[in-house]
Length: 222
Image (cartoon, rainbow, N blue to C red; front, side, top):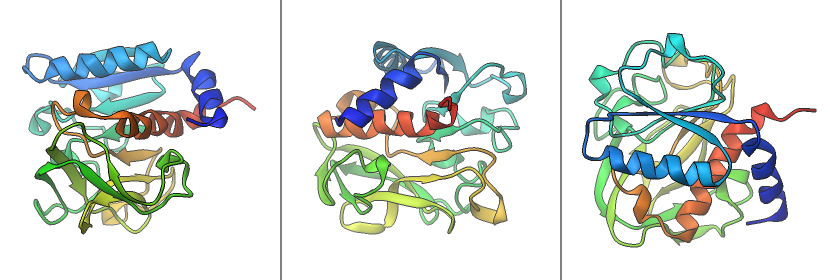
């Protein structure tokens, strides 16, 4: 991790409040609590809330993470319009967020087993100073989520050998997403699945940590 990256992490960790939306009663929620612990170890304040959380009642939160442990049909309305940076790997909810189209396995989906990404945007901060090309991000083969974003997105990586399946991508605030919807704040898709966070290797974690820093960069004080 670069000096710049370390500095950014230390700046945002002092004041950033993160909300992680989970299905707390799900067996897979144990992974969400592992994510909470990981981010807390980096210095962030992280609360895990259930999928019944209303986005209209959120206060003093700098970043929302929607885990794929949620049942997307049970999420409250309003996440699409939320003017707070949002990260998700729940591919089945990408269309509800207007981040992709609505066709399952065409606009969004998951691959059953893989461990490699194809890094396609090395100069971008979200590439975490990793080299362009094939990158192993898992310790062992596991599911990966993907989605096809709108034209306003910045694509960082695709599933290896499947360029039609972007796995890491993001919208800046104000970028055009799908259905001509304008992103009310930063939006980002990451390739995880329900229980794959603990399967990330060092490079996978570097990508994850960099994503958090990028999403929180709006909180930087001049």
